[in-house]
Length: 130
Length: 401
Image (tube, rainbow over all chains, first blue to last red; front, top):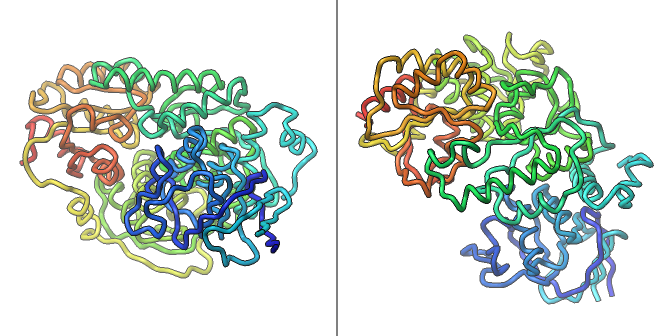
């Protein structure tokens, strides 16, 4: 077990399997709002779904419509369980807060990969890798 | 970040779910930007109004906030249609029904449903030094630069969160230190007419990434010129504040140590017309003036050019403005003159956020660099960016010669 300290942006606690993207994600453009699938060609996660995952990626990019798309994924029940970013930006922060998705950033280290069993406690500012 | 006991109580949900969520948004943004505390705002201006940009889930978010109410005067960005004359515009009925649901949601929240990107021309102008939370990028740039108010470029949800909490986080352009010029731009271009100011704004936005420009050499800067410049600069490059020597209030502070020096001449400005036009000749389906919403002065100029003439049946000439400006234009007889010539004056909306792509338009002429920049992707039309006078000529001819 390993504990990584981080900064809370959106409150909450979640447990699940990580999905790691070394490339930035824009909720408007990268993600299909109807399926949660990564549809951006040449994206390292192309073809994978972000639903129910602990989504980990470095930074956001793109349009402010992205906040509503993340909220929409949550209303459809296909949002990620939690989000860990190297550096959060306003679009995803607002979307995560609207959708009650825990979001943290600035982890002490950023050496993640997909398939890790993670417990994220945003309120305590802790990422626990089991 | 420092929070008062009252703010902590709101975050615990003591004043309801909606207010809690809205304060979480304000605080979350403050955390990201390293704000020390929250500050009260005097007004908000909220984007995310056209159903075209808001979408079904944006609408559901608005509806979920009821019964919360906004606590400061709050107005809206343009909607996707004239709220009265939408069927005359050819807006599809299913779109209109969704748009009216958006309007009802904002009404329930206590928002003043002025739908305009130029609230400062319609009775909502912040004073110098006043902290506000505005989201229309052109109005943000105008309010900061021309009026000396203090606002960051808010997103739709964060401006609404400020409306409901009356608060924003103290960072960015709310802090005096961050408002000082960091680049000097010498303007030697002659600048005749609003479209030249729009072209200059477009260049400015592209040239000064992460900088606050100090403009020297502008021949004039009236309200309409500042409006055109602000809109294009905010669209091409996220610009939220500029200073113009001799014209804007904070330019009096002068330039301190400045990293970058740039220059704009006549050739640069002329080049923008060419760069932004995707067509050079042929039939034009729509001539659209009003990005940002027209002032009474622009409608007066249009009426003078159109008096006794007829718009070609091959095209449409539409002006977009705010409701109060149209009412005044009606009193002055300007709307009659424009309509007798075959033009129309619509309120509440514009050529970018209306669903043009569903209304049969494929080519459009505009005198706004911002509209020319956005229209090909937002509305799937080809555009020609030209002067106000040339736009009127195109409307009379029905084509671009």
